[in-house]
Image (cartoon, rainbow, N blue to C red; front, side, top):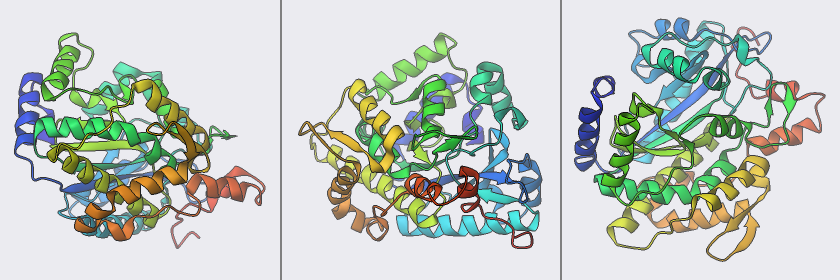
Length: 384
């Protein structure tokens, strides 16, 4: 990725198109973001560089990266040939990160937001990429103390990748509802299920639900327009909830909150991977896929932000309003045949309650939202 990032815009676009045309079809990788905490106070702590340095020379090193603020760390599975392999890597990376954090007295959390730590106290990591984001976005980037899980699926064929992206637009609200884990932020019980999404997608430019594009040429025309008008100076400044990644030949799904529970993280990534595979097969077989207007997808996105898995979503095929769980169960049923082929079927599940629902339920039993969050933190064994 580093070499691709340094290419001039024309070279980057040409590189990306060629990479998609020659991609190793339907490989998968998962990225998980974790908050770094002081074990005694559970406040965010700016210790990424310390952990990254400590990982140098280990197996974890190449899979461990910074993500904007020094109180955040990201672990990557690396490219996997099947979802069975990806799920194993997710468990392995979490275990490796946990051991590293334990050794340095750092606690870990994986909810979409930290419930109370102030954004003013977080330091942006010192890399050219994030220094540039700081210069461009200022307050917008300072406020983005959020944590997600991203799934990359390689798609062979540039036009095919655009078609898969277009299809994902329609189901972003379902994936968000399933993943919602961020009801608390700025020391407030927000009433939302994904405060992370409200903060991130409503503040960043070129974020949230993208337009649908007819083909790669139409997408490329837009990217060139952004470069030509100096709206962007690197391709990662398209922060959409799903995007064709121009450094990898992947469709990257970015809508989801971070997951406290490994099994639920695996289930979420499995559904995303199965959907990508099913969409690609539909494109290959010329099966019609809906292309919903942006305004309708946004209507369901708000429902997912506000009510998560507990709420209702609009089924635009029927015009009915249905429980979010029912919509997700329909998606699982639709992808089940291909899920079995790609090693994802055993991981597909809709939990009895997702992370946001469980936090709200515990809030009725515990004195504060801080106490609820404390139950979700992985505290080093020698401190616990």
